Image 1 (cartoon, rainbow, N blue to C red):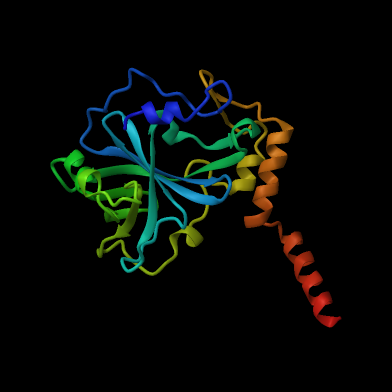
Image 2: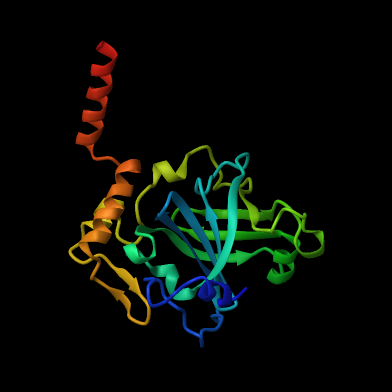
Length: 245
């Protein structure tokens, strides 16, 4: 897919996201970069990204990764992203769907195969992750065929992200146990509370000029998943009052 689909779907005069370096190539290192970005947009989800041939192959994981091998997490294959996107944490302005991105995990990955492209085509990519939160053996498995084997009503985007049984597997909900950023150590609110939250603007990289409108829209979304302690108390009080009636 490279970056053609990524660029085709975006108007870089409006989106804050990076266009990507057209001269970027795969890094000459044995272990490749991976990251997971916790992304509050229309809904909260986690973007799982692995470096391959100069881009970040990307999957949107609605419920986030699970350390439990018995739990199979849906992972929707999306367009490839530029490598520089993998270090971004900050705000997406209202002109392109206001949201906030947290760098939830980062590290390196190693394919457990000699041919990544063949594994992707087959729909069975086994890998080892070495991140701050995600470690050990994992697999991405496509739920239905690709190409000639593709079902009529399936576009091949549906995959499953599954943890293999090893010393890093367990019953702990890692998204609840370790919810904050590995870059800043902050929550969504703490990322937004910076004096100048990073913003992706095409051809300008990181800036600190998120508008008040952007921040207000992001906070409205944030209130639905990360209410302030006072908001929880007021909501509980209202519920109690209604029951008494």
